[in-house]
Every structure is written in structure tokens, then in C-alpha cells.
Image (cartoon, rainbow over all chains, first blue to last red; front, side):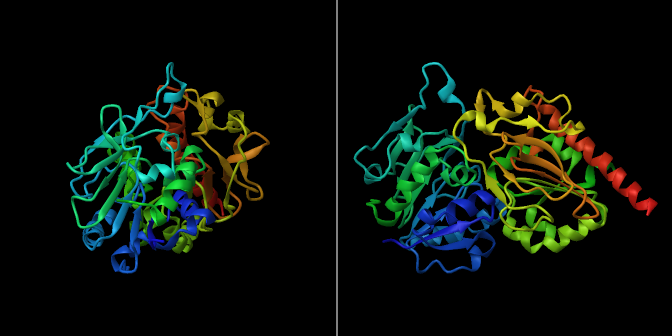
Length: 202
Length: 213
């Protein structure tokens, strides 16, 4: 089992999500964001960086998170990223369609780009389907696992930019599960956390 | 100083908040500061503190005495969100509503109030035909003497005003920040403006009551 630490914002959604017993059992430590710079990441294999973190504190921790990845760590980042802190970050904001499934001929527009990947032994495309806030255009050599129909990455794995691994998704299940909204987000986390803990990431 | 600087709006600094940071409505009517600045700020000159749903409640818990003193000085605190730490006087922790069908999200006006005047209930319940954005639970039981404004089915309080617990006024809404209800071309746009007007009126009433004593 990989040892997982989570950056904890203190907001109500993150409080609920990361204290939920079925997820908490995969988490070795919640590191309170204001304490992140002083915290030791040495004992951890994976650092989860949730969505919607305080801009100033997140950007202040950018070098520390990068250093963790350069030591071979796995960083999992959730949600829209309007500020640059991921390596080779290329984020494209898109208007969020919260109600696509109410429209005629509804399609979520999501594509399973790497169906053989071990992540999909843990989740299905449907479990990753609620809405997106935008897409990433990752560096060449990164592996896109879930994309939009035009090839924008909704979830990708980047082992190119650093010595470690970046699992980056525009999806924000940490927020939605924690705010009691969008049931697919629970199925996503039910599979994603066990995969992070013991799945084949490469 | 104009009145637009006397409502302190704590900005969680989160990605979804970018729009609010750039909004002229917010800039013109609030003093927007990073949430962590609350620790150092002298609240004396402010009449109202707005606490957003993405607020760091671990931090607010450390600031709870400051919040209490502010209220006991006859001021106003507006909190929209899901309380999980007891930093807000009298407010019970959030409990989610059990949801079986979309009608479980139906919002009702429990008591007419200027804040929700002219707002159509269905337009709070539904956003482009989807229910559930507005509120999904409650802070119950509400403090003794609190005025319940909005409810979910089963008379579950969603929004209340508490003038009993402190010498000030506490407005609690178990949902997202109500000041984002603007420019959507719906009757819910009235909420942001009317809530703002209410703050100024409520403060006048609070200070007037203080003078009588």
C-alpha cells in the first residue's frame, strides 16, 4: 500500500470527503494547508492536492510539491487550475455545463482514451462523468486517460516532466462528494483512492 | 469612507472565487480580503462579516472569540455554507438531508422577508431544470427565537436569522454564498441586492437599539 497524504484546506467539503471513513482509511495524514510548508513529506508516496485551495498558499507551496515529485513522489491534483503550479501546465477554462444530461441527445462528451489502463479496473467512464470545468493540454509523452471529444485531457498521467508522477484531473470529486452533490463523484472516489493506494499507476 | 467598505467579505482564495474577485458588485459593496487576514484585522470599523461556503473553518474556529466579540458589539455575521466546527454562536453543525428524489430539494419560503421578496421559489429550487444547487441540508435545531426564512420539505430550516444568541445578528444559510445570485436573468438575482440592503438596514436597527439602552 502506498502511503498517501492529503493537503487539507479546512473547507467543509474537504472536511467531509477526507474524513469519510471509507476514504480516510487510505489516508495516512491530512496536512493542513497553512502548515504544508513546515510539514515533512518524506514518509509519503502520494500527495493528493485537492481542488479549490487558497491561491496564495497553493502557489507558496508550489516548489515544495515539485520537490516531492522530483524525489519520485506521486502527486494527484483535482479540479480546475487557473493558476500555474503544475509542471508544464496548460489549462483551458471552459464553460461548465452542469445540465448536459437534460439536453436533447445528451452526451457528456467524455472519451475513454486508454481503456487498458489499470485505473479502469477501479472506475468506469460513467464514474468519472458529471461535468468538467475545462481541459488540460498535457506535455508530449504524458498519457491521457480520459479526454473530451476534441482530445483535451480530463485526466492524464505525466511521468515526463519530473522524476515522479503527476495524476492530474479537471474533475473535482473532493468538492462534490464533500458538499453532498453529484452521486457519480462517490463512485469515482470509491475506485480512485484504492487505485492510488495499490493500483498500477505507471 | 463610503458604505461600500464597511462590509468585510472573507475570500477563501479558491479557484471558483475568481469571478467574485473581479465582480464590480463585489468590489463596489464589500471589502474583500483573504480569509487569513481576519486574524490581524481590526473589525471595529466594519458592520458586517461575510463568511463564504469555501471558508477554512479550522481557521474560523481559532477566530471564534473574535467573531463572538464582533457580534456582541452589535454587528452582523452572514454565513452561507455547511458548518462543521463550532465557530458561529448558536449555530448547530450541518446535517445533510436524505435525498430520494429531486422534489426533496424543493425550497419554500417559510416567512416572507425583504431578502427574498419577489424571488420565485421554483427559481431557487431549479437551475436550468436541475434541483439541488441551492441547499441540501440544514443547521437544526435553529437557535431559540430564530426566524426561519427558507425551508426544505418537512419544514427543514435552510436559512435563518438569529437575534437572540448574541447582541448582534447572525444570518445563516445552509447553501452556497447568496451574493453569487446575480446577473442570471432570474428572480433569484434579487437575493444579492436585497441581502445587501438588509445588512445596512439591520445594522441601523442594531445600532439604534444600542442607543436606546
